[in-house]
Length: 332
Image 1 (spheres, one colour):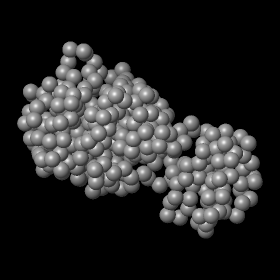
Image 2 (cartoon, helix red, strand yellow):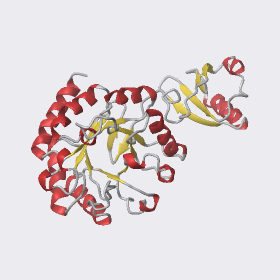
Image 3 (tube, one colour):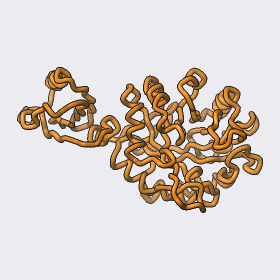
Image 4 (cartoon, helix red, strand yellow):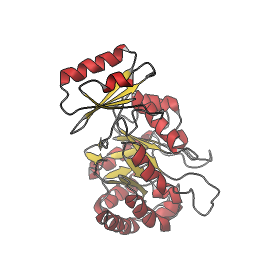
C-alpha cells in the first residue's frame, strides 16, 4: 500500500502518521519528493481502512499494490534514484559508461586499458578479479592480486572501480572497490544479496540467465530490505533458443524496468551479444530505450585475452562506440 501526502503536510503530522502505521505492525518507507511525500507501507495492510486514511487532511491518495517488491517499486518512490559511485552519478538524468577488460590479467594490461578507456570518455573502470566460469579449467581470475591491480589502475586514472564479488566471505577483500557487481549466476545467491544489503556500497545487480523482470526486482529487494538503497539493475541478455548471439539482448527490459522501478538501469551489450560487431548498435539501442549507463568490455589486446576474447573491443574500436553513444544521446 502507498499513501501520497499533500504538499502542505507538516513534519509533525507526517511523524505522527508514521508512528501510527508502525503501531499497526507495518514498516514504513518514506520517500520525499519535490512536491509531495510518499509513504510505502510494507507488511499486512489488510487491516488498514483506506477510506479512513483517505479522509485525513494530509492524505492526497491511497493505493493498494500487489507487487511483492516494495522498496524497488516506482509506485513507492516516484522519483528516479541516483546512485553515486566514487563521485560518478548514475540515474536521474546522469549517464555513465563502465569500460575495461573482462578479466584483470596483469599490471600492464589493466593500466593500459584503463588509460585508454578514460581517454575515450569512460567514467568507470570495470574489471574482473574473481571470474565465475562455466568450465573449472578456464581462467578464474587473479583474485586478491587482481583487486590490487584494479586499485593501482584507479590510482593511475582516477576512475572508480566496478568488479564482481562472488560470496559474502569476499567482502573484506572488496573493501576498497567502489561498486560491487553481482553476476548473472549469482542473482539469486540470497546470502550474498543480504550481506551486500548490510553495506552501503553501490551494487550492480545483473539479471540472471533465465530470470524474469520480477525475479530481478525481487533480488534487488533482498539488498534494499537490509538497508542498502544503492542498487543498480543491469540487463545483460537472457538465454533463449537463438544461438547466433551469446545471449538474447532484451532491449524491452530496459524500458520496462524504468517503468516498474526507480532504480537506475545499466545495459551490458558485451555479454548480451558476445560479438564485437554488435556492441555499437546495441549500445545505441539501449540508450534510446532509456539506459542510465552502459557496461562495455575493452581489452588492450583482445586476441591475447584469457577470457571472452570475442566480445572485447580494442581501444580504437571503443573510441568508435563512444562516438556512436554520443550521437544516440544527442537525439533523446
